Length: 145
Image (tube, rainbow, N blue to C red):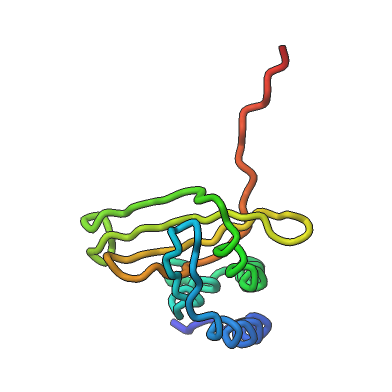
């Protein structure tokens, strides 16, 4: 079975953002008690490859890569952890506990919500694992009296 040809537009975008990403290194995050968040190759790869190993769609990958410069701002300015998920070692595909934090912050002049995912495997370092726009939560309508 032949592998599909990578989209040249996406390849150029990945190449351009990889250089900027490599310069980030480590960022301290106040909402996580000033712990260091490491920007690793695994986190960068997750921007254009899904967790299952399949490539993301062009629109999705482009959106995530274009939001990448805001990741540092979200980690440094955020005042809210939207969700924390713990996957126990027995349920984990790698046999170690995996902890995910979804850190929320509004960015830009339009104040669009962004979520940065930070992951910790076992007792290892916290590392950047992705950025995406925050979806609006479905809230029940307010009742009028």
